[in-house]
Length: 258
Image (cartoon, rainbow, N blue to C red; front, side, top):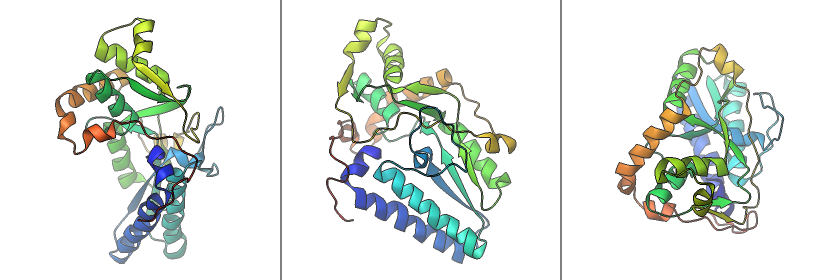
């Protein structure tokens, strides 16, 4: 999403901000019991050492994160104005079967399974927290049952890995090699995108207090994910197109409406 948002900033704004406003307004009119808005850890901006909690300021650094942060404001306004029971969640990077292959884990898996190299922006030292999809589902169910209206909840994990290390792990599992030189062969480092936050460390104590913690170990989750893409990659429409490297451009270089 982040790469595409630099090319299609207005489309992202239209879908994420206007679209969210349509949804929360309709939910309010229908008197739904609880409206959960799924946001992202990227609204905090990057950090090298600061751990973000729900009260940390929003400092988004790309059009995608900016549109999600703005949408949060629309949702929160319905709580402030109408006491409409909204809850906002901010999650780490989700991975697992069925994810569209433009995202980094399914993209790397699919490229390697087709004997193509992993395309890495910049140094590859950017670190991300990866959370298995089943754990996120449990988090949403917990928020649905136990989440307090008007509150924000970080849905995070302490499992963190650099993008280059992620590529090496997947190369090891798919190409069956531990050779450093062979791993380097399957990695293609390209020019970095305009902004690429180093880390998004989050404190998820509020979720822990509701009784939720991630349960699926990385080795188990990534094995299931690799197996699913081995059998199902071509079930996606435009799956090959999703594997192409995103062009690197200056921020907001192309502004086109919906």
